[in-house]
Image 1 (cartoon, rainbow, N blue to C red):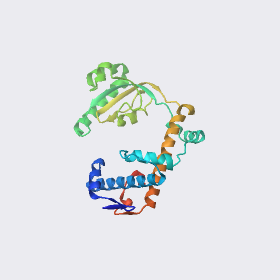
Image 2: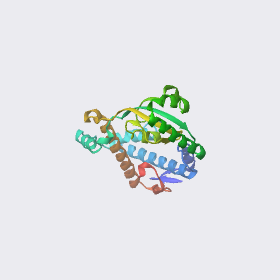
Image 3: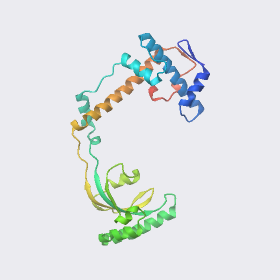
Image 4: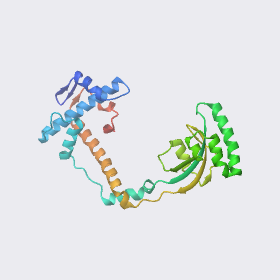
Length: 253
C-alpha cells in the first residue's frame, strides 16, 4: 500500500494499472504503475489547490498538460537561440548526398563462414575482370549478382541516406567515384560497387531550418521543465510505501 499526502493507493489499484506499463519483469511493471498513480494523485491535488477543474475521464497526460498550462511558464527559443544552435551544429543541417550506384551482390549468409569465404574469393576474381574492362559490368552482374538489379546491369538507381541497410550505407557514402577497391560487406553478402555519379550534400540556410530548430529546442526545454516540475511535486509531498530512487523513468533522471 502507498500513501500520498494521506491518500491511499491500494494494491488492487496498482495491479490494475500494471497492464498499461510494459516492462521486463513484474517488479518493474509494478514500479512503473506505482509511479504513474502517485504522479497522477500529485497532479490532481495540485490542480485542486489552484482551483483547476480536471475532468474525471482525463488521462494522466491530459491532466498534467492542463496543470502545466497554468502552473509552469514554458519559455520559447528565440531566433538568437536557434542561430547559436545552428552555428554550433552545421553538420546536422545539410542536404543528403545523392549517389548513382551499380553493384554485384555475391550472396552469403553472415553465419555461413564457408559461403563468405567463397564469396570473397569470387569477389577478387570479378574485381580483377572489372579493373581490366569495366565494360563487362552488365554481363557480370547478370551472371553473378543475386540482387533483382542483376537484370538491369546491377543498377540501383539514385540512392540517398536511409534507403539501404546501415552497414552498407556507412561504407557506401564514403566511396569516391568509380569502382570500389574492395567489396562492401552487408547482411546479404558481399557487394562489388560502382559509383557512377555523386552529388554531395550542401549546407542548408538558417532560414530553411529555423522552425525545425525552434521546435527541437522548445521540446527539449519542455521535457526538462516537466521533469523538474514533477520532481518538485514529489519533493514537496509526503509519500509512504514507495521510493522514487528505484525508478528509471526519464522524468526522474
